[in-house]
Length: 437
Length: 164
Image 1 (cartoon, chains in turn red, orange):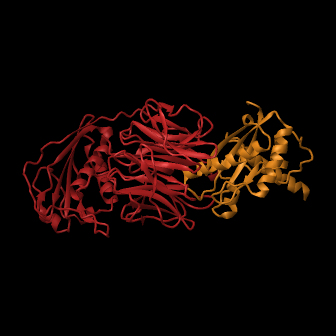
Image 2 (cartoon, helix red, strand yellow):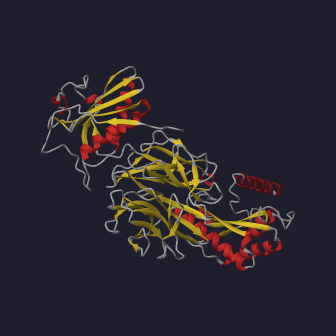
Image 3 (cartoon, chains in turn blue, green):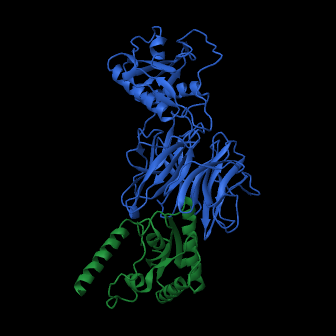
């Protein structure tokens, strides 16, 4: 379980030509339908014993990342006129232009013992120029997937003007067994579902994990002591502790953006309120009062505000309040009920679950409640979480009936590109980390 | 015919005890399962579960006790007053038509409604505790009202002696 990953990563000026292109190649991301950019990712070249197999795996992960974003379309290898046999040779732009590639990614993988070096260059085929300098990542061979994700993030970033989201992780709840006796285990995986590993053994129900800002720790709810309580778990050492020693049922924990505090719900009798707690001292301040159900809090990225759900008005709706306490303002006013609000890392949008006329939706609205848009609809869609760049939302979709089971899904904030995350188990309650360091 | 019925009832009881074996206590609806009650000791947990009834049902998104719920809880209270050595845990449950964390809070509300009512009938706080399972432990697994109505429930789980 101890997977201490040390990726040494350096930027080398592999390519010295300075290029200032007035009309740089760019995927224009708008709210409307976009035409995915045609991109060619020919086989990466390789040096060293066993390097070619690794180069092919890295290339496949990069392709999966970029195509999976919905912003790019791969031009299949079978259509390629030429291959890249020498990473440092001049690119034959005409061969790539002829197959209508707009962008070209070339890569080279060097394996020396256990040290892996991955180099790549990105080209604007139309302008026949390199886009930025070549980059080089170096680390142990066990870090090959992360290097592939970092490469894809760099390509994504140069072609969209936004930061990427591929070198990130998810925490989720792995589910097994019949619907009336589900076994639930806390799990983590790469954002694409690879490297799934289980952090609890299924002996107790576990729910709704959230990463700390540096992804080293997870807060989650467990029935380990008999009743639902919030625990803090170190992802690498698997050391865990009760976050709050005082008795009672606690759940719905989320970290503050600086990681020093956790907001959570505490139930006393019939009443559930939101508290903010100092992670180190355990000092706890009550933020809501009254007999309503107040839960599912989420910090604004600057830490100054909380968005949460309350049924104080009669049914589940979304409210915003200062982190220091004070008056809450309702922001959801559409048909049906609203829950599980999550503030976008960009700060502009709030994602939510909406229940209306027996259907569940994932949606987004501006943080003042305006411009509500629904991104999905099914028997049960729940629990949105944001990609590190605020571009994609992951959630879980549970199918109906006695054999119903949950899957992790992603959707672009435009509502396009709905995809299932490839995990080897049923999964619910996803939480997406920030970009890894 | 009657032996056939008995077999079904035993199978039902086995299934329920298998559910109990996972450590989550009673999952409810032990009442009205057709087992003859004549042989049961009125002070036994089985009598409470099967003859008194351990499960109270709720309306959608509500924790208000219905008239029939109150009638059942009156019988539970009477039994508990007659069996002062017993403590109980009231489980609160919700159907799948809600978000997970809201349903945890809703289950807690239902369990608390039962707890509070039993206290008004003379039971002391130290014999009662509550737990919410939200939508984590449905009793019925179909995805329509026939099952949801069974899952919106509280289950009164009788423990051994006080403090056990």
